[in-house]
Image (cartoon, rainbow, N blue to C red; front, side):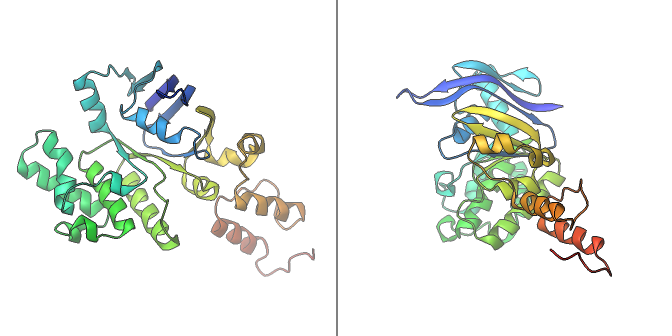
Length: 284
C-alpha cells in the first residue's frame, strides 16, 4: 500500500527557479527509502512538499490515498503523520532544554501534560537520548542535536519520517549509530525516507531507491535493481555502488559464481569465504 504519493507535482520559486517539474514519487507503507540526487536537484523542495510546507502549483499530494486539501485542519493532520527532520539541526532546535524542545510539538497538538511526558520519554528513549532530557541544547554535540530533532518529530507519533541529508556532518562511528537508531524506528513500523549523496549507503540500507535530477524523479526502483541500472546512475553522474563494481570484477575473473548480488562488503566477503572454504582461489 502506498502511504504517500506525489503525482506530477511542479513548483517554481518566486525568483523563477525550478524546484520540481512534473515530479512523481510513491512511498510504500513500512519501507525504507533513499532519495539520491546532486545538490540543487530538488531533494529539499520535494521533502518540503511531503509535509505541506510547500504546495505544488500543479499536481497533487496524496496521503494514505486521500488528496491533501491544504486547509488548516488538513495540514495539521498531515504534519501529525509526516515528520520532517532538516539537514541542519540548528534550524530545527529553538528551546533551551532537550525536554522543552521535544515537548513543543505534542503541546501544540493540545495534548495533556501526562500524555506529553509519556511521548517525550518514549521519543528520547527511541533515539538513545533518555538521559539528556534536562541537558541544555547548546551543550549537545552535532550528532546529539540530530537525535533530539528526530525525537521532537517522534513525539508527534508520525507514520512517515522524512530526513534531509541526516548523515551530513557525521563521522563513521556516528553514522553507524545513527543508522542503528533508524533501523530501530523502522522495526517499530515507521516508514523512512531519507536524502543522501552516499550511493553505497543507499544500496545497502534502503528497500527502495529514488533518483532525482533537476526537479524530476527519474527512477524509482527496488534497491537490489540498482546493480542493473548503470544508465540511470550515469545520467545523474553517479557511480555504481562499490560492492557492485567489486562483484562484477570478481565474477569476470571467475572468482565468484555468476548471479550473486551482495549489497554489503561483509556479504561479499562471506560469499568469497564460502566459495573458497578449504580451496585455493584460482590465480588471477
